[in-house]
Image 1 (cartoon, rainbow over the protein chains, first blue to last red):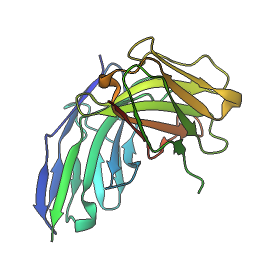
Image 2: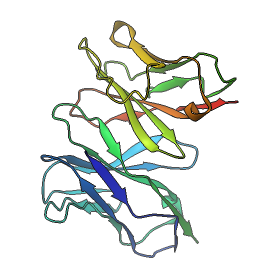
Image 3: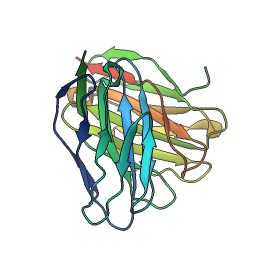
Image 4: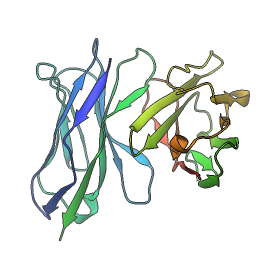
Amino acid sequence: GNSVTQMEGPVTLSEEAFLTINCTYTATGYPSLFWYVQYPGEGLQLLLKATKADDKGSNKGFEATYRKETTSFHLEKGSVQVSDSAVYFCALSAVQGAQKLVFGQGTRLTINP
Amino acid sequence: GAGVSQSPSNKVTEKGKDVELRCDPISGHTALYWYRQSLGQGLEFLIYFQGNSAPDKSGLPSDRFSAERTGGSVSTLTIQRTQQEDSAVYLCASSSNPNQPQHFGDGTRLSIL
């Protein structure tokens, strides 16, 4: 079946550090890939997405590139801020015409000033 | 606001009781999804409604779970004869169509004593 595996957390970094959160997937066909973020006390929000191989999704300084050859969608940011502290979820949608999302287990990120 | 609204925000009930959780999607959104976020299982898809089509119930964990969507808008998720393993945060999401990003509500935190 379809699945997403994320880097285990929690991850703690200092402000301005480089961030990578690894995500790999297993899916039939050509899934769409997403990163969602859940800030403390808030609901899930879409951070970025990519719908086909070699696409790069980007938002708020975060980037992720859809790599079909390695079945990966790693999240990166060059210089993190305290406000980036949140739980990050990698997800895929493999069903044509319906975004039933399959989520990874989430990675809790804490940025210290 | 114009976001997805869920009620109640918190629900505590005794094992064996029935519960109803409500979701008000964003006005005009035809696609509505329910997910469950629990410590042991992460984020799991439960059920999907699209317009007037028959719902996709493939994620419902048992026949104690059911959901309906009246008039293509408000949705209710019902859990009968609740068990302790039903304790979780139940999330609702909607999108303008199945190929657009999902907007999530803040969830209902359900605790079964």
